[in-house]
Every structure is written in C-alpha cells, then in structure tokens.
Length: 247
Image 1 (cartoon, rainbow, N blue to C red):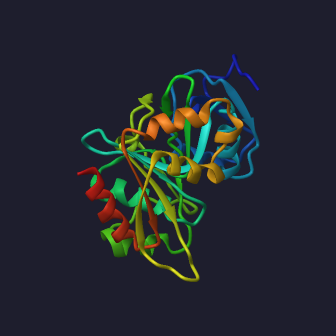
Image 2 (cartoon, rainbow, N blue to C red):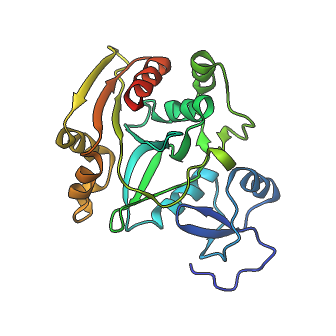
C-alpha cells in the first residue's frame, strides 16, 4: 500500500527499487531488520504489515517488482567492471559461490539468489538482500577461501556497504554461467554454450516466457560475452574457472 505520510521515526529500508517501512513487528525483529537491511533517506513508497520472517518480507518486495524480468541467479561486478551472471536451481551452489567471490576477491554483489532486470530500460536492479546461509555453507566457505562471513544473525548475513554493487548498471553480462548439480552421480564438467543455449537454460528458472519481449532482451544481454555451463565441482573449482573466464 502506498504511504505518502510515513512517520519520520519509522525506519525506511530499500531493496531494489522499493523504499518501504515495516509496521506491526516486535522489537527483536526490528533489530534484525535494522542490522541486515539497507536503510534509506527516501520517503517510504510502501508499508509492509507484520511480516512473519525476513524471507517473507523479501518475497513481498520482490513481488512489487512485477514489471521486471527475474531469474534465480547471483550476479556480481568484478573490480575491473565486468559483470558475471550465475543462474541455477535452488541448491546448485550459486549463492555460496557468489558469497565466496564477494568475500575473497572484493567483487560487488547485485544479487545472490534472485536477479531483477528492468528490461524496458536495460538496467540491472541491485537488490541488497541478506544472504541466507544453508546448512554446510560456512564449512564450504572455510574450506574454499579460508573465510566465513560475519556477523551472522539468525542464519542471515548481509553484505552491506562496500560489498553492494552500484545501482542502475547496464544490463549486459561479460560472463554468463549455468550451475547444475547432480547429487546422486556428480561429475565435474565444463561446457561452453551459445547465447541461444544459455537462454533455453534460463527458461525453468525465470519468468522470461511470461514477459513480452524479455527473451529477445536476455539474448541481447548475454550475446557479447561468454556463456558456460558448470556441472558439479567444488566451490574452489568453480571459482578457479570463473576467475579464468574474467581474466
């Protein structure tokens, strides 16, 4: 709901393009929000009433970007300005790899789980949401890069400040990756893809088929870079390949 008369005492947060206030939450949840979410000096566009969890709140904000192309993807900006897209189903390892690259190599984060693109303006929407750490993630990070994120609050880590990418970056990708994982019969394999093959891999993990003209736009965004599928492999093996591709 629109909120033109928000009280100045109420914190305003911003995720993606939406500045919002939260009402009806207890103090412990408010403290969690203040620690994990980026705050804004803007007036709140929306009021979110009594979200039960941080994940519920984030999903509501994602839904407010209903005119955007979304993908299950991490997205990063390298120190020399290259943009890396990592798509994959839940559990494929995109968030862990995104986190590792941000922590160990000072890459900036546009998204770690869901990437939003304003494809009418060809703009990537930086969504500074917290990383949700799944069981085993800390061990994977320690083994691969020798570091773990901190502080972690209720299983969430927020890469606020210098780790968040600038807003309104142009929507093109220098490296576009598909992560897959076969837990029963893992076999590390790297396959170069054409832009059209990459687009087809995006269909099950995006709304591209439901947004008029989005397929053509996405093809345009990846066509000038390299497209690769990485099946299985350790976090370190994946990182090594990504570093090779951006070098």
